[in-house]
Image: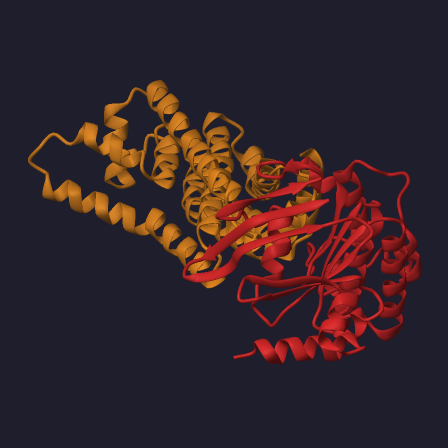
Length: 255
Length: 236
C-alpha cells in the first residue's frame, strides 16, 4: 500500500496545477497578512479565501486526476493487488498531496503571523477540508464513468456546499422564524463541512455574529469546547463515510 | 489452466458476454478474434478480475478467481491503451511495478533490451509517443516471467521492427510452456504465432479450434483468408 501512495504523491507534487495552487495560497496569505495591521483581521480575511478556494481546488483537482488515472487504475487492478488497497492508496496519496500543498501555501504564513490556537485551528480545518473534498470527489468519480458528468457533479457539489446551502439555511430560518430553531440548526450545519469549518474557527474569534446566521446560532448554543469536539467528530465522519462508500462501490465496479 | 464456465455479462441492455464456456491450456497461443464490440476485451477483463461477470465461474489453475487477487501474480497483461501517470518517468514506472510485484530478481528484461527502453528511463510518460508507451506496456507484461500472458491488441502501435521482435518473444515464451492470449485485428501478424483460435460474435463464443482444424474446415491455407471466410459467413 505504501508503495502506491509514494508514487501517487511524487506524481501529484510534480503537477503544475498543484504548484500553482500552493503559490497562489502563499501569495494570498502573505498579502492578506501584510495588508491588515491586525493579524487576527488578516486571519479572518484568509478564512474566507480558504473556505472558497480549498474545497474548489480539492474537489475539481481530485475528480480530474481520478478520471485521468482511469487507465492507470486499470493497470493497477490487473496487478496482484487488492482493490481496497488500490483505492485507499490513491485516496491517501491524493489527500496527503493536497494537504501538503495547503500546509506549505497557507500553513507556513499562518504560523509566521498567527502561531496561536486560532491559527492552528485554521490550519487543521484547512487540511480537513482538503481531505473531505478529495473524499467527495472520489464519491463522484466512482459513480459515473463519464468524465464530463463526473466533473459537472463535482462543480455542482462545490456550488451546493459553498453557496446554495447557506441560502437554504437562511430560507428555512426565515420560514420558521417563530419557532425555536437552535437544535435543528446544529443538525443542519453538520450537513455542510464548509459551514462547520467556518463555525469551528469563528467560535474562537468572537466575531461569529458578523458571519451569517449559522455561525451566530452555534456560538450561542455551544460552549467552545463542546462545539469543538462535536465539529471535529462531524468533519471526520465527512471523510470516513464518503471514503467507505466509494471503496464499497469500487470493489464491485467494472473497469 | 484457465477454465471459463457459462460466463455472462450485461452492460445495461448490451449483452457483452453470453454464456461463454471454454478451456485454455498451457503451451498454447490463443487468438481471440471477432468483429468490433464482440466482447473480446470484456472476456479478457473478466479473466483479469477487472470486470465481474453476472453469472458463471472462472477458475485459474483449479481455483475460483472470484474475490481473489493473488492469482494475478502469474499473469502479465498488456492493455489496449496503456496510460501511466504523466509525471512519472519510465524508470519510475518500472520501479513501481517491481515494488508492487515484490520481485527484483529473476526478471525477464529481454524486451526492455530489445526495445532499447533502458535508454529512455528518464523520459516522462506524458512526453512519450503512443508506440513507445506500447513498448513499455509490452516490456512490463513480460517482465515478471508470468505463466500466462494476456495481450490486448499488442502490435497495433508498434513499428515493424519492434513488432517482429515482439512476435519472436511471444513464440519463445509459448515454447517455454506459457499460455498466451492475444486479441488482434491484424490477422497477418497472428499467422505464424497462434496455435488455436477463439472466434466470438455478439458476446457468444462461436468456435474454439486449433489452427489445423480451421484450415481443414475452411480449406484455406492462410489465417487471413480462413477468418475472412468465417466472418463473411457470420456477417449480417
